[in-house]
Image 1: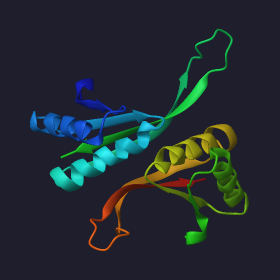
Image 2: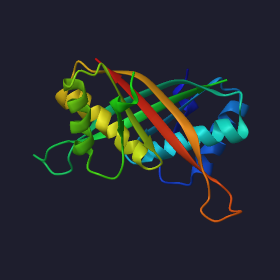
Image 3: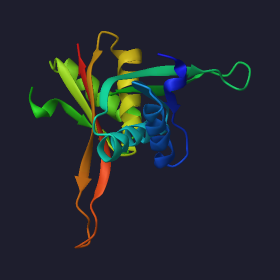
Image 4: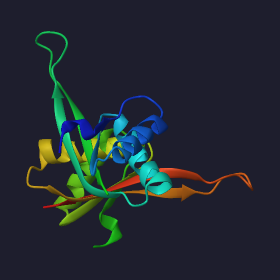
Length: 92
Length: 92
């Protein structure tokens, strides 16, 4: 699957990302990955739930992966920060 | 599995819930469910990641379920609110 079928969740309203998912599926994608880090993780789950329940009931959650990304500190010598990640794969 | 092997994530610091998970495993549990709703979902992922990476590397993520809970409105006649949920099953 090409990486272009990914929706990276940020701080915009949930519906923006829901629309992005729907657009990818309507454009012919069979799989869409919804990715988020840190506090956006709960929004990623919202996006998936709204997409499935309100707009595309034929879309299933195929896989959910969680993990940790290590962010380099801005200051030299500073300790790196860990941030949790989620990747939810939707498939129809 | 008994329902007592669940850790419900709220607004306390992540380490409180990490300690709860570790205590359940050390008390003999083979599975622990980490549950959260709404904005606490990202904290649930933090709890799982810290538990696995820093304290219990032998613990694996067995299953992740996401869903939607419908909350009744406080006011009569109000529309119910949907809230996303996550349930992460840890097993060693």
